[in-house]
Length: 112
Length: 117
Image 1 (cartoon, each protein chain N blue to C red):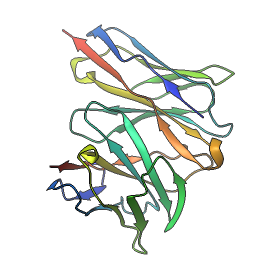
Image 2: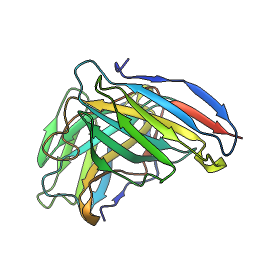
Image 3: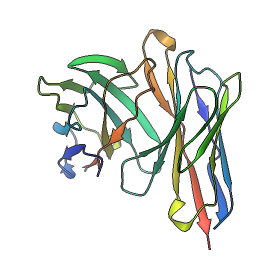
């Protein structure tokens, strides 16, 4: 059964780089790793997605090692508005049916 | 605004009752997902539909059921409600399921907050 593990919380300061790692030992072979951001009382919002190696977009980078058993979301130069909960999402095809597994989320607090 | 709409925004009901939550996906999206988020809990995947057919199923209770209609909107039915069913229920949509389970970007609605008393 696919299971994801993330740190429960992290603290940072404005302008710093933040790296959040998610471990997913049993990720499905053909599945992607996706990260979402959630603010209180709102639905999650897509940040970035990758299959292997490194992906970069205008807001973040995603590093995925060759074995794909983990991934690291990198937020460059965070600001106060990046204070949110960050989730990784992977797929699981064990047990004879398909399902999506969100990590428990990492609560990031950015301080002035 | 993600383009996904959910109604109602809030719902208060009593134990034993049945409720229906409604979701309209983004224009053009064919796949709909339902999630449950309890207080201070992460997102629990319930079920996914693609073009009217069930595609993936999570830990959805037998008291819960869902369907996607020909116009692509979806409904989540919760019956014999218990106190523990109080949660935020999110619907998300994507253009299509994608090669893997998670390839397609999901766009989440604002959620329906259910309170069971």
